Image 1 (cartoon, rainbow, N blue to C red):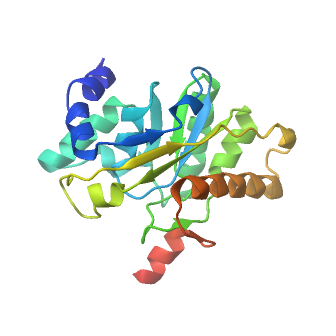
Image 2: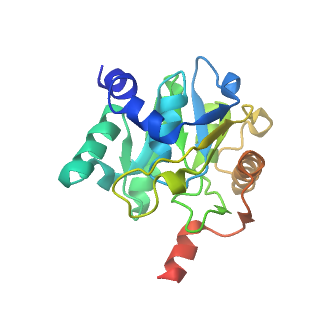
Length: 225
């Protein structure tokens, strides 16, 4: 009920008005069954706008602090993410990150659509960074298809550090689902996991037009201080 209200009554319609998303490839979204939605990550708004334009419910992993926000904006964000069923993860805790993969696998095996950002964090400069292998682990464990999606312009709609969205038209492009049955039986194989992630990132690049950087975004952020 909360998901329906937030998406169709408030604040969903207001968010749609501010972002005026141009969507392509919506026909590529599987209508039923477990699916892994893998996208680029430019802004916090990504986890709002993708669910708003998808015809089926999608759950995202997100930073644990998204559910513990303070102030009017922070609490509103926490309520929204709670309503859409966001699964919190402590990014700096390796054991918690591993456990989050298990949670995603559980949801996908139950036939749900689950959103993952393979980069692991927001892009520091608008480019697309090397994907981490969590998404591949889920694909290998579940056999579910991976739906690549690219958002464009959310970093202008919701710049880093901004508390309120700024009117800006965005684009959301869904690619064709990717299946990795040729890797059946290779769960835990690092070569297979890396090959899967690299293919996913290649598809996201095609959809987003971003420059690709063969380095982890988190490492670049650390170097920037």
